[in-house]
Image 1: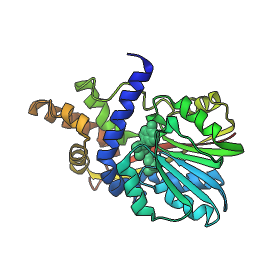
Image 2: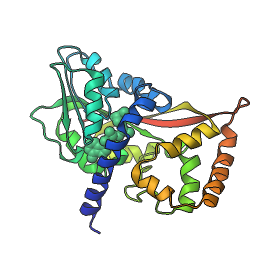
Image 3: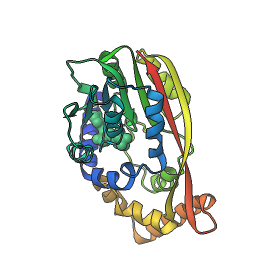
Image 4: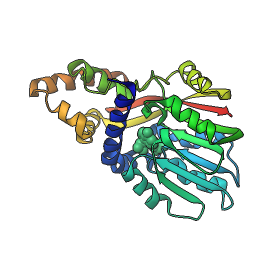
Length: 280
Ligand SMILES: C[S@@+](CC[C@H](N)C(=O)[O-])C[C@H]1O[C@@H](n2cnc3c(N)ncnc32)[C@H](O)[C@@H]1O
């Protein structure tokens, strides 16, 4: 299959998955700023965005970064927020409220068009979703003022056991469980993250690492919540397992959580996050 058609197919899948999961994502994670979402405050501090700036929040999701940006730039600044999921934008609009200087656009990050140039661009937990991230990064560069800044956050490749404790055993049983393309952890080290941004022509690149913690409750909460909130394509694959396989899987996953399980039975996972800043 050609790269472009693979990319297009993957993006369509991403849109339909995010249209489905956005309400739960907002309620469980973004709205409450739990675990890895503690990074939002750090991201905004590092961005050095100031009053009267014109900023773009790329892949704004349900509006977590956007909401804080509106306060940061003040009434004389401008905030543009784009996302490819209609359902995410709908939630964001309701949550942030409307104002004259806030503009939501449903768009693919690879194909953005603006009549304005930005002082700053933020992109939290989305770069790894773009099949052609260089195209997106070059777009950012194109619409960024000279000396403008980008501030991006991604999950670490290592030390994110919330994902790995379940996904590694599941992928052993269902090898095609997740799309192989694009590789979601390709920016998950300081070096690979900085290399991708350098390749797009940015300078003064700095990557900082943060480790947050997140408790999904006791093991049965973690496991049952995972199963309950699977998106349609994953649920179809998961449901193809026999009862015996599912019970084996549960045991394998439970074993992997033991090192993070406290005396009261609650799991507390570490969660590594990288934040990168760079200039045009
Ligand atoms: C994990 S969420 C992050 C949302 C938000 N930045 C936050 O921190 O809560 C990833 C978002 O990327 C969006 N996304 C994925 N691919 C995209 C694309 N090609 N163009 C625009 N948005 C995209 C999804 O719709 C989703 O809302």
